[in-house]
Length: 94
Image 1 (tube, rainbow, N blue to C red):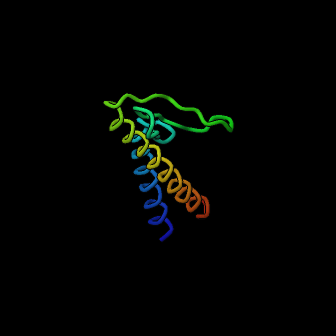
Image 2: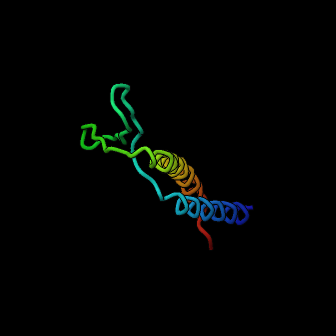
Image 3: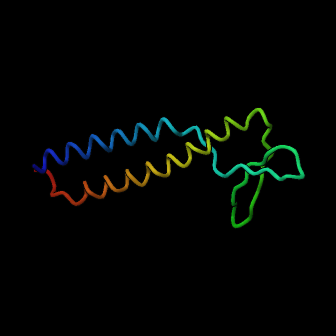
């Protein structure tokens, strides 16, 4: 029973690791546009301060996908942490 559970968890861990590797084309932050200004900014916090970078309109769809990748990686890291914790709780293999 525990061997099956260990094998299942290790397989799931490998799946998550592959998914993380596939989603590493990412940027941190969020897109912001001000009504009185043209264009977009990618905003994020750096050492407690909000910083922005100008994003050309043609790059906005690509940046949105990269932001979604960041959120996906965060979610996958949570899942990986849970799987790793469950593996740690299993008795050691002999």
